[in-house]
Amino acid sequence: MSRRCNSPLFLVCRSMIAFGVGAALIAGILVGQEAPAAAVSLYDSINGSTAGGSDGANNGTWLANQFNTDASIYSLDSVTLSFSGSPSGSIAVDVYDDASTEPGTLLGTLLNPGSWSSGSNTFTPAGGFPSLAASSSFWVVLRGDGVGAANWSYTGDAPSGPGTSTNTNFSSNSGTTWPGLSSGTPYMMIVNASSSAAVPEIDPNSFGSALSLVLGSLVLLEQRRRGGLKTAVA
Image (cartoon, rainbow, N blue to C red; front, top):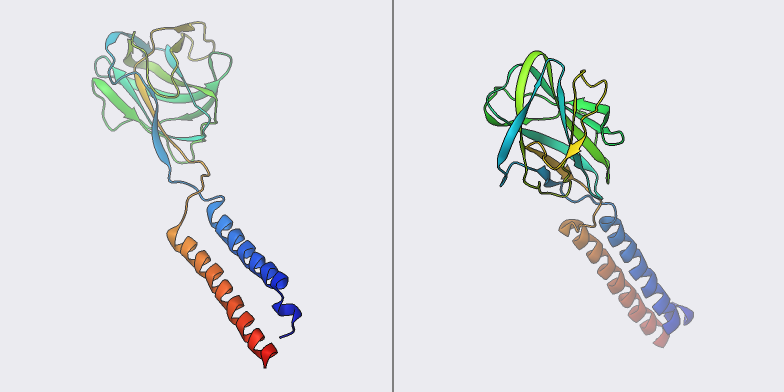
């Protein structure tokens, strides 16, 4: 090995390169890894709330309650509505985006529970349901078609969660117009969703492999340095 290759400056440069390679490997492990989806109750006006009455969805009368998202993008997990009495007939629950304080574009219809009951009934999205955009407003719409009837309970208590809103609305012509915007007495519901943000998260196995590679490179450089010095001395 030449004297140039054993000079302190050259060895420092090679050590810096080794550290740089290791840092790049570790950064590759960290950047873009997705943290496990975190379940969140975006909106809850059922737990800890007392019903103050109910409104009926039937014969083309649709009821709507607004909720919001925070700075995260969410996947909808379920929507639970609280009914006064057991629903009957043909009813459905939809989710819409917001169009200036009223339901806008339909995002999808939720799957009904297997059976109806008085109190809480949970509706779930089918596969392929679109994500809920960050910092946006949405509407849960309960519709009664034909003779379908469900009495959706409302409350004067404030809802909890990052997506709270007390805005409600209704349509008496199957969603053609929404003239009934009001606030202060939200319908009783829970909106459960999961956020999944790109957060650095260390995989112990990958991190250990990268660290071993860095340390191995440094050991090899040191061995070569010592071998070169012996050759030069000889």
